[in-house]
Amino acid sequence: MSDSSLPRRDRRVIIAALVALTALSWVYLVWMAFAMDMGSPASMSAAQVLEIKPWSPGQWIMMFLMWAIMMVGMMVPSMMPMTLIYAQVARKAAGQGTVLAPTAVFVSGYLVIWTLFSAAATVAQWGLGQAALLSPMMVATSPALGAGLLIAAGIYQMTPYKDACLEHCRSPVHFIAEHWHAGTAGALRMGLEHGTFCLGCCWALMLLLFFGGVMSLLWIAGITLFVLLEKVLPVGAKGGRWAGAAMIVAGVLVLVRI
Image 1 (spheres, helix red, strand yellow):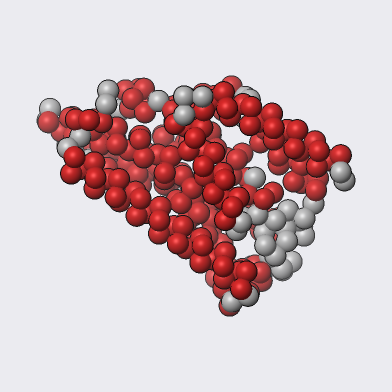
Image 2 (cartoon, helix red, strand yellow):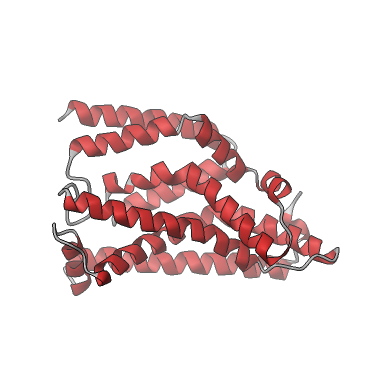
């Protein structure tokens, strides 16, 4: 099945909306990173979050929003092929009498999963900060922790569960055929299911942000590109396993240097 049957105008609107959502997220991330580098009030607030003391409600909200917006910027590009396929199938189903569910509902379901992950990542960041394992720039201060994250991510890249989740992400047509649910509630359910598979595919990679820097634009961009290529390139699955081996080797080297 191809997305060629999707009207050109609809296709352009969907792509433009997803690109705009991604761009706005990256604008925020760039602003936040430069604010921290330049020592602005925003950077002071972010640094204060990492002090070993209880967070205020405002600090919890600030860090949760940072993670949630970051996940939008990192994950929306790789879900674009799936979104276009969904829009095509939903439009075809509507022509056969099924209620046409807005594509935005499907995307919203996907983002709900990554918002939940953002909440968990915020809690993890708080815990690492309380244990004095994160620097003010949100980088792991413990070589052992950094090595552990690399090795764990590398091992996970080679597991059957990773392969199964990645296969669903790499095969939009297969996913739609296997998980199709009609109507608005069905669109939300499909978005949640796709987001769950995507989370199962990428959660360990996201934890590497604690190794390279939660607000390192280069590190964020690198993981974003890796996730995209792993999902869309013909050699993505095999390349992901080779990358996993490289992560394990890098983790061992970090341990050796301790």
